[in-house]
Length: 100
Image (cartoon, rainbow, N blue to C red):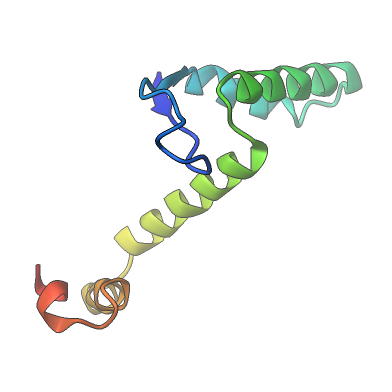
């Protein structure tokens, strides 16, 4: 199980304990969203939304995290010079910090 914390709230008001989120179950429910059965799709969507609400997350949080993951995967597949350029860009062009 993964631990996620919603980032959109200020950290002072958030309980420091991380919410436990059953990622494998959530992924299974997301897979059921492509079911040919209307009832199964509706049940899966309702349960997935319920899990997100219980963890104080939104679908937007899930989609943003998926985009970040895809960016990291794409960077891992990039050539070495592209990785250096990306690292340089992420550090606002500071060549000293890019070497670190």
